[in-house]
View: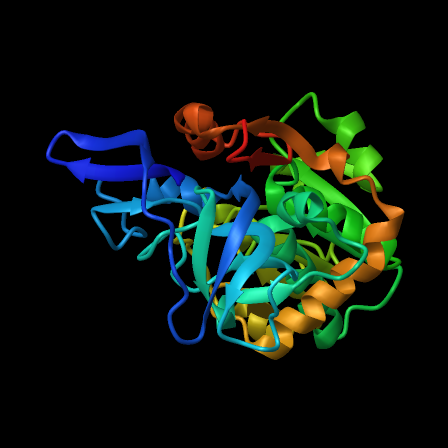
Length: 327
């Protein structure tokens, strides 16, 4: 089978399209004929030299994939089923979705709702799954319909889809972005308004900023996350899943104590079966009202993956980049 392989040497990371053996299903695994994969920021991190994310010097990349099951050890995931595979160590410590076939643990495979095609499943991808997971976490914490929810990194995969899901579920999403020419596109996705990165908070010289947001979805991290925390309304929460800017930020405890705010960590990698089912069900409910092509930056084959990975790492995408093994 054709696959996209990453290899790290003393000179750095090299990429090549190779002929690899077709995988077989071990116990508690399924084999999927891949129709689409995607590029997440995590994939871009895996592709870097001395990556702290990648756990193998050589592997087939791609942390998610969608397609049809061709072999299964689980009667709950039958041959012929349309599925999405994501999470666990796919594309990090074991071969991932940048191949014509992928063997994935059953725990990382989800049956797709009828309303979601395998193509749309990878437009959604890990990014869209994380976006909906973030929305559900805010709702579970107490977010009330009609609230104004700021979304950082709004032109990225998680942020762009979060805008739409929030709007469809009755909230007022505010897109925060450093991309100056994306306003019309973001408003088309559902943003009630668009602000710049410097508009997230006010009065930076004070311990706390004014109470601006009923909730937040942060895809950036670093100082941006702190700016949100100090500007949340009383008893609001931020669902944080990103570290594009930084994995660290300088903070204090005042927002947590005096405003009773919450920082909700969002992890799709180890999401339970119950969480995966709830998120895909919610995605299936909103899918009929959407045109997922609006979220596609471009579609690439394996030969164009190196430049596409670099584009995602630079934060230069508008939505999702799809990957197909059938270019």
